[in-house]
Image 1: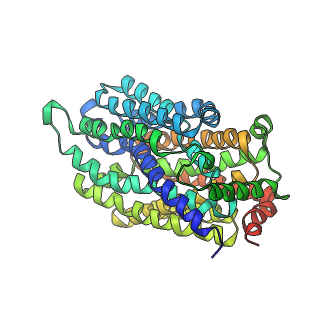
Image 2: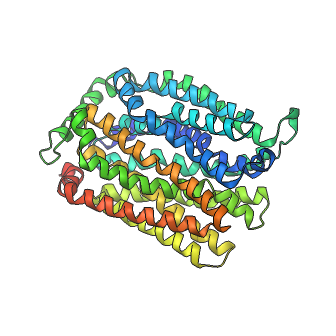
Image 3: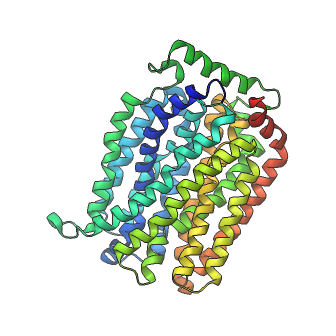
Length: 432
């Protein structure tokens, strides 16, 4: 066992569970619309295309404010800025309970994206303040396990809250938004007390431990094969950043194109709302375990690119199978495979940018990758809703998503041609 393993275990135990809780609440507030739609759409007469656009417009607000938000975080510190993000998105998410029709639906979903902009890239950037490249994928993967866990927990919880229809004069979908939105405000306040800005300000580390963490990160930056970019302007023009943005775009098309429609797909197969909640939770629970195993495998092998490309191909295969197999449980099983594949990419993927970005370049570059990628969160749900109205089937939408996943594979392999040597040296070489 490396001599500093106990130190990084200590850091992980102090930071990762709390960060996972923050992201779990964030993702739940982002995607609970998929369960609210089971009753909200009929009550407010929202068509599939209106729902698809409303679900996706979140990502336009997210895109516009992503880079500025992460640059502010790098300047003022993670503790203060993450707290601000969480309180504002919690309030907007709870306000979704007062949607009256398409216009208010669009406006509040857009504002939710504005409020949450910068959270994920801020958390990724924050992890690079603590963990060297050789350990990064496993801890990013562990942190991002909150995403499938949010869906796994949120699915049965949301279906339960929908049953509160009529309590105090509110519909079940209104209670869903209120009860799942307000915890973000309380956690935002908790961030001020539990999330130190950097290792240098962590009171629970000894002076020697702070020195070790600082030294390991300095070794990462000094490694000659990194070709690290520290300046913001060149980073935003770096072709590798834009290729990673394109790769993430396709991944996010798949993540939300399937995820934000999965409850309605399952409900359309004749299952009750309670059964929908339980069935939808299964692929996300499997995804959480797969993310952890795959992220550790990426670190152990010192490889990132193929650890992104292979699960993307698995996800594409799952979607093609969902088109080909009979409707019912076989289709759900195929969509489950597609879901697991998508989530397996996340740890290794976010281990790629720190290979060639640091400091302000990392803040801006990671935010830009996430911003461009999350435009896929607009396209995915929207294209599925539009093609559903045209064809009365989800299959055309699945085909478009599969094509986007194929483009992701091409983009990440192109990135690999430009960083493959540094990527392996940055991860594996640090262990020598």
